[in-house]
Every structure is written in C-alpha cells, then in structure tokens.
Image 1 (cartoon, helix red, strand yellow):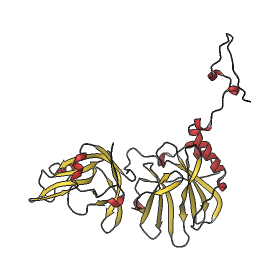
Image 2 (cartoon, rainbow, N blue to C red; image 1 turned 90 degrees about the vertical axis):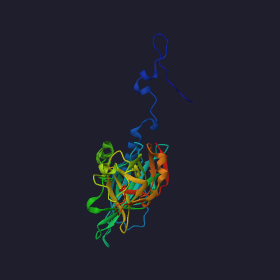
Image 3 (cartoon, one colour; image 1 turned 120 degrees about the horizontal axis):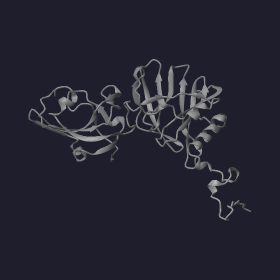
Image 4 (cartoon, rainbow, N blue to C red; image 1 turned 135 degrees about the horizontal axis):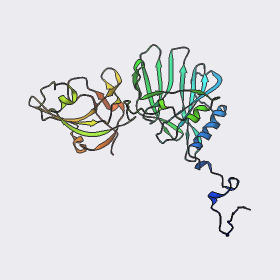
Length: 330
C-alpha cells in the first residue's frame, strides 16, 4: 500500500508541496543531486579502495596505502577520479568516471605511476590541459626525453589516441599537467574539486588533443614578411598564395621532425595547409583544396604523425598538415 500525506489550508485548498515541513517532503533522488552525485560516489571509493581490482602485469609491491586525485578528462564538467594503489615499485592507477546512471565505474586498462628499482624505467599519469583525455608518461632515467601517450575515456575503456608524443624532461610543455595525489584517508580534496592547476590557463599555449582548431586564411608572399618578422628567402613571387590554419592563441603542437621522431613546440600563429607558389618562374601547388575553406572556422582531426616540421627555408614555415582524419566546420 502506498501512503501519501496532503496538507490543506484553513480554506480547504491544498498546501504547495514546496511549503511542506521538511519531514514530509519527498527525498531527492541521487540523479537530482548534481555535483553531490559524483562527490558521494567518489567518497565511497576512497573510503573502500581495497574493494577494487588493479589488474596489471607490472611489478607491484603494495604498501597497503592508497592515494587519489580529481582531474577533468572529458570536458563535461564532471571530474574523473584517479585511484592509485601505492607501491614501492610501479603503482597501478584506476580511472573512475560516472556512467549514464550516475554510478562510478573504473575504466581499463590500468595506468602506472612510479619508479622501477631495476632498469631505471619511470612512469607517471598526467592530466590534459585541454581536458580531453589523460596521458601515460614513461621514460628512462638515462634519457632526456619522455613519451606521452594520450588516452580518451570511452565508457569503461581507456582508448589510445594517436601515437605517443615526445617531450624533453627539462622542458615539459604546459599541455601536460602533473597530478597532485592525496592520501585516501584525507577526503578534503573531494570538497575542493579539480585543482586550479589542472584547469586550462587562459594564457597558456595548448593544443586541442587529437585536433587543431582555427580559421583557414589565405596569405600572400607580400604579406608574409610582416607576419613572420623576416624577409622572404627564396625570391617568391609577391602574389604567391599560402593557406594556413590561424590559431586564436599560441598552442603546443606535436609533429614529426626529420631524424628526431616527434617534436613538440609552441606555435604562435598558424600551421601550414597549402600553397600556390611561383619562384623564379617555376610554379608549385600543394594542398590548394584548402582554398574552399578560406574564411571558415574549422577543426582538423589530425594525429602528430600527420604533421611535420619545416626543416628548410620554404614558406610559409611552421608545421605542415600533410594528412588528416576529418575536417569539421564550426
């Protein structure tokens, strides 16, 4: 039998449910609790970390303690929870997200954080400044460079996005954000939410992970000296045309560099898309199909392996977009 309570005014009219005494109001469902939903889900996880399986083939020597962190990996405003099983060797890390029912579920595979005592291998988990996935970093103590593999959170699966990017350990770009770990015995970090350091700084150069967003422009050779701050080097005809993707602000770009694998640099203005060029009477065309997009704002879905840094004096300079997966008009 379902029971309900109705309150009436002295004139016999029903009282608005919003004016019911607290004990008579309908309880809010978990799905109506907004931010409190993920907070309560994650509170349970850090209070019971030993209930979860950290399946990995890596050498793990648990200390019996756990750590956690909040990051934004999907850009939907709901943070993901990283749960680390502390270890004297590699520490496995689970990534929790909320499913459509508002329940926290771990994703696989397990990521790694820590140091291998033998062999000098290192690993760490990094957040993405653009809030689009997270990175598994790995390197050796004897090497100056580190690999950063981007993973996207796809339901209960962490999916690799593109090839690993390479960056120098002494100059790690801002697009990779260090994770601040907190012991699970201290729940205060949940109340604080995603740390400001993990959010995208307004003036920081960043890259749209797995894509490039900007406006397609056509620039003539006559305009390039002022834009680049130097004279054209190869006697290009002033009417030569160059098609570029012009960025709203500086950002980190990863692209292939001849003989060096992938290199990450800060690009202030643009990447190169195409050219209709004349030098000393010789005509050259490349990527002129981009002319159809001039003046349009687009997102180019391209992996670092599809871009390459210019290694000669050819214009318009910067990195070239040699190939792409998709183009979306915005």
